[in-house]
Amino acid sequence: MSARSARSESATAARTALPAVIRRDLDEIVDRTRSALQRLAGKTVLVAGGEGFLPSYLADALLHANDQGLAPACRVICVDNRSTADPTRLAHRAERDDFVLVEHDVTAPLDLDEPVDYVVHGASIASPTWYRERPLETIDVNVGGTRRLLDLALAKGVTRFVYLSSSEIYGDPPPDRVPTSEAYWGHVSSVGPRACYDESKRLAETLCMTYHRLYALPITLVRPFNVYGPRLRLDDGRVVPDFVRDALAGRRITILSDGRVTRSFCYVADFVAALLLVLTADSSGETFNIGNDEEVTIAELARVVDEAAGNGAGVAYETSADPAYLTDNPSRRSPDLTKLTRTVGWRPSIDLREGIGRTIEYYRAEGRA
Image (cartoon, rainbow, N blue to C red; front, side, top):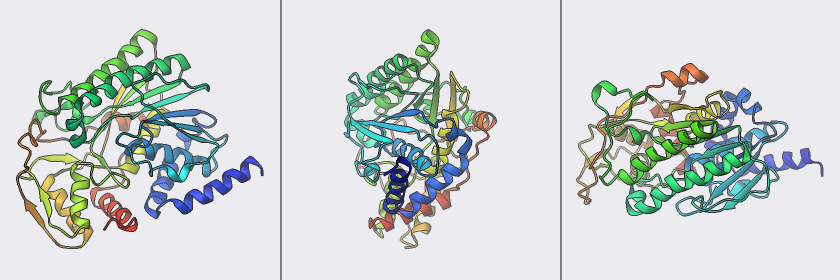
């Protein structure tokens, strides 16, 4: 069988295995980023934390581009220690010549006997529930893991190293800094219950920029803003999966606050399209917010989820049993996307109602309702 025939069979099998919502997402991502993807033709992309929510979507999009005719195909190496990841996310991509999954903890040295052209570092413990339960492991992967991957990237002479940081590095900005631009330095507690995540992400950014300045390593920092969508674990502890889990169970959606704080939620297909554009742009030494600047209250989010689920159960307000649940919780969060739009011409295309609708469609099709 020729390589082209094998790829065609693999593509057919993958499309059959993929849920319809994710197939549509991947089609949209590839359609929006064709010129960027062409720059990755024949290249090897290492995705750290590859079975995580955002990294797995990126890996899937790259492999989908191969199936859609990217030539020569790019090679995708996913690295994950499987401590918090969902191993089913990329199971449909097994047994492919253009994909390999390496089970490895990035806090230890990684030996690869092949070229690496691009690194996207998304290995982290991102769930507030889990990083508060495992603070030292969170610091280790965000700091030690980043240092190990930077050393690997330096040794391989990569074209680009993209670090997936977090909008959490901004902390709780004052009203005149919302929407928040990349120039804002942040208002973050170094001693609170979120500090293991927030401050280690900030130090990881410092490490990246230090390698850029010392060794001219081509670094780009990306700060995601509340990305959600299919494949996000419903036990993740973040607000969208919590609300979706309630809605799918036919329960009232429980808000563990007064519902007045705001967030800006970005659908995962929008995020991955922006990430691919940034990955292939001339953006060395730059930092980019990626998110949706549609700012909504948590109460409004709950109503959107309840309406999208169609069960009319409504909303309930309760108090968390965890006394530190709302400690250092930002009152507002919304990205200034001016720099991103100016640099790569990207704007979010999927609004909250559409994105929540797709998310619920996915979980119902997967039998989670």
